[in-house]
Length: 247
Image (cartoon, rainbow, N blue to C red; front, side, top):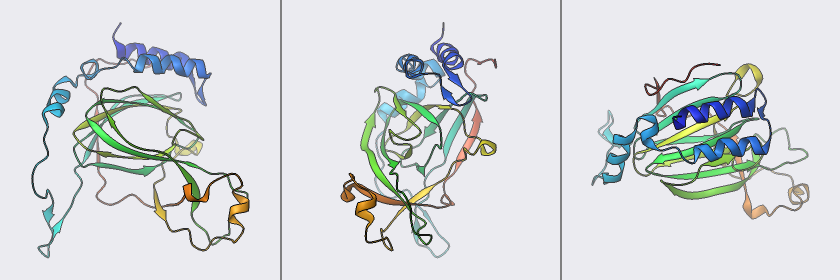
């Protein structure tokens, strides 16, 4: 049976409209995902090209109206494979230097597999805090990951409250990320994607250290919701590999 079909079947059996049935069920999907290769999803040529890719000298920016050099991150392509009330499956194909900004996955578990290439990932988890001043629009978060990933590598899992639920990617070389979300984004169910930026920790109460008892304040950053940058572009396309039938 094709690996993609195995992943689909495992997701159908392991996930519910509220997430994984159990940790064991989640690990079943993850074990199959670890075996996924670019050739299994029709991206073998792209993977070979990524291995041969070399950075170009000079700037890749375009000149603005005033003649100044401006940087425009290249668009990202999302290949949609499947979505139902239990889970969604898709692939993000990222050109070098492209960025997926810092964003969250509220109430969701996410499995990701870097199919080819390399990227830098930075992720955070929210830190629980009893109360914040009404004037404070930011929330405290703790760094979960800040590293480079290079294929081939194992798949990763982030959970609703741990593992780096809020993360961002920057492509170092051409790369592709295979994503499984359970349950999928749904604005109707309160699971909409929000973007964030890091802000200074100003205007905080004097007893903030006591409220965050047991947490090293040096490890805390403050994140504020913000609209995504205007030059963040994701082109959505339909996956044209082996079809995955709906349940």
